[in-house]
Amino acid sequence: MIIRLLLAGLMGGIIGLERESHGRPAGLRTHIIVSLGSCLIMLVSIYGFEDAGNRDPARLAAQVISGIGFLGAGTILREGATIIGLTTAASLWVVAGIGLAMGGGFYLGGVATTILAVCTLAFLDKIENKWPSTEGIIVEGIVEDKPGQLVSFCKVFSDHAFNIKNISVEINEEKSQALIILHLKGRPQLKEKILEELSALPGVIKVNWR
Image 1: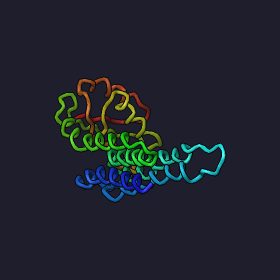
Image 2 (image 1 turned 135 degrees about the horizontal axis):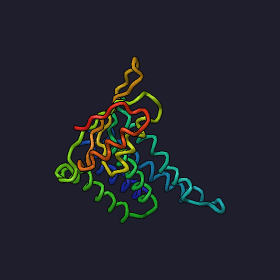
Image 3 (image 1 turned 45 degrees about the horizontal axis):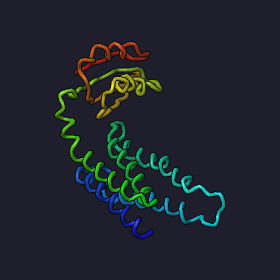
Image 4 (image 1 turned 90 degrees about the vertical axis):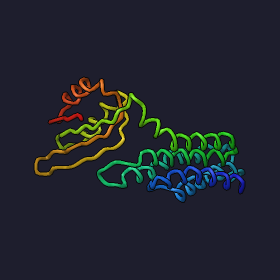
């Protein structure tokens, strides 16, 4: 059990160091604690109820996957109206999975996932920025300040496989309007089609693509 906990902490720490080096809100300590906690829950699931009949070790461990979403949401919403930290939230979710793998004795899967995650975080961002089909795009939209407008606005881009790098929302209470600013990566040749779909959305007043 101690070996599994140590390995879980080590794997979480490796990913946490990469996030720490980029100044992310969830760094070394957070990733280690998440991985350790996930590992412990898996150990409790396996060894903590040995006397119970018809037990299912996966039931308690499964709650980690949904529960880690609350911590991830905290890193995403940390900057108020500007939504950042999506990658860090995802790394916390992966670290939780690594902790569960280590707690269950699935060492190969945990180590392999750690290596792949670090490579993805450290190197793919540079490749993504240089990829010719993913030019940087900024889209500004003025919409009515109503529930669900941001989701509908962003869904148009996700339906066309655009990567939303950053979202900012500014509310104009006097006019009951909201200014949505999206920083995107995607195919600029879809500009006309997307602008047509955005303009057809209820509550969209104006859209500017640059």
